[in-house]
Image (cartoon, rainbow, N blue to C red; front, side, top):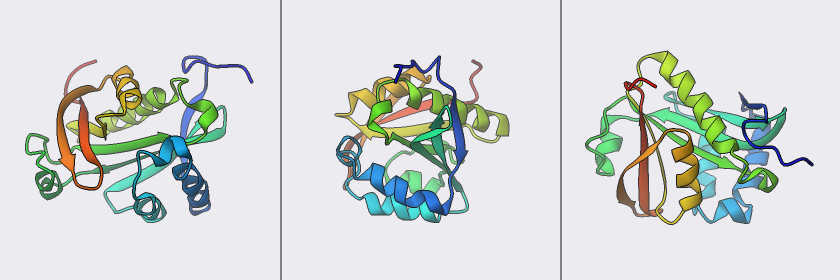
Amino acid sequence: MKNHSFMESNVTLTRFSSTDVELLRHWMTAPHVAMWYPEPEDHIAWAANPPPSGNRSLIAVDGRSVGYIRWQSVSREVLDSVGLYEIPAGSVDVDLLIGDRAFVGRGIGPKALLLLVSQLRHRGDVPLVGLSSSVQNLFAQRAYAKAGFHILREYHVPVYGQLCLMVCNLNETV
């Protein structure tokens, strides 16, 4: 297989359906993903039945499903519960993973993130998009930076430990 860079690949966000739950479970238990998700069943249950403020897609490259992205509007109470007082209500929290190991490190994640940010920007009601990674996951942080995100700060969540919050302000012009 030719090693495509993300600029050469046709990356799309495709509909996630109930038949994709087992694929997500397979990805979440893969060693390169599992190390960052200590409670995969919570994520799988969310994907199977997202809340009204949430949605999810598969990340596809040239029609092949290689990853997963989910997002949801975040309430003031949830933000406050983890000490993120400076994040405006109505912001969108994103989580993504590249489950197919053969596609890790090819720039697929940043391109998928840019597609989602574009969709959210067009909605017009999302002030900020944020995502978090372990402070130890420098690979993810570099990928998010390629999509225009910057580190706002670190914070702690009991199950996940010390996290790095990266944000993209949708009210700024690009």
